[in-house]
Length: 184
Image (cartoon, rainbow, N blue to C red; front, side):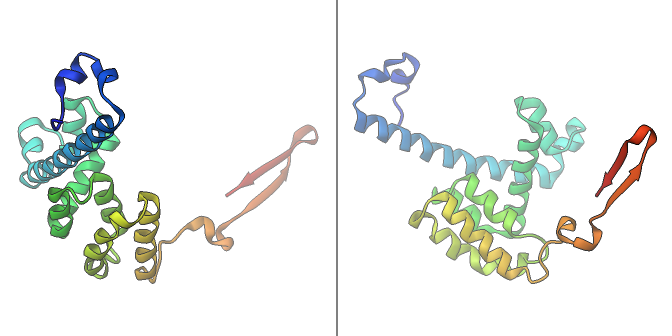
């Protein structure tokens, strides 16, 4: 069975494909998607590093991509952020993307976990975390990555909502027997 039978897809003839071939086709498409993700990250990182879209089109790379590819701005900016951080800090993520061992979603989890406070301490764990990908579900793997990051981040992120001394509630009598409530 060919990698992708475009004649079947274009003509809606998937009903003629047996279940095993259909499963194989779905996995082949995912393999192609991972290859495209790798190429996309490489190209976006290079565009951003050069400042091409800013200079030539007057737009940052993420905004330019969103505008010209008709994509959501947040998702496009996120792709560029991941691409940039992979290029600058994580050659092993780039290699794993290129080989198809991981996809964009894996790269995003790793990059997001490596916040600026722990990036240097996190780097030695990246290869081992990538090696865990085939051994568990994506959700379980993501929790492992987040767990490693949490252990490394001794200061932890400050969540103001967790600070009980910053939480306030004020009750004020109002006109005609009403009660004003203000809380933070």
